[in-house]
Image (cartoon, rainbow, N blue to C red; front, side, top):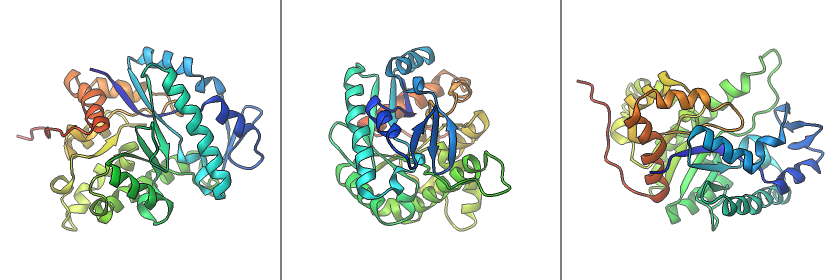
Length: 300
């Protein structure tokens, strides 16, 4: 059985070239990536497809599901500018996927498109009407996988540390998206298969608080709503499994944004059977739309 990483980002050469020709965010200049959040060191070698396949081999991962992260801020651009960048990425990534021998599968940004395994959207797609609603409607009609990822924050607020957006900002976005999903978006899109990045910003933490409002997530959560592990360790992953069941958690790394090693180690330290579900079984049924048998841990 194949093993999967549901959360990777890979930029094909034409997309990198397009970023280098820009002078407003997002753009690349002098080994720096500039986004609405600021300027960051950038190493193009992280997006070399051969290097990426070698990393998959190193980590014993068969397939990476790659997307164009909304945290670049592309969706906030004027429509023509935004579409050109997204379509450049889409054309380039389909070529890389075709050449990868099945090692790469791609998600189309904010749309359902031929040749893609699903669509990736920003957290606002579930919170606000607009472009995201169109993507969700299309995904619902075609029973397509939707991957929800945080979007670009602004510059770090004055007096806050550099890590502020990555923690308070991104997790807050994902929590709002998940709660919007529970609070009506799922009901409006019953055929969507969905994955929330980053354990939906720590969604299991809030289960007991929701109970005080009469919402028992474990009773209402459907088998096509899942959470990826990106950036988290064993304690958070175990809590998510305990809350939602092992069938609703899957391995995601956020490569190359962060080092995948700690999360991958945490997943594999849970034992062979759990690791297989998180890395193989859950991803396969999600991508192939197979129904699971729920396996919530025994609390007796």
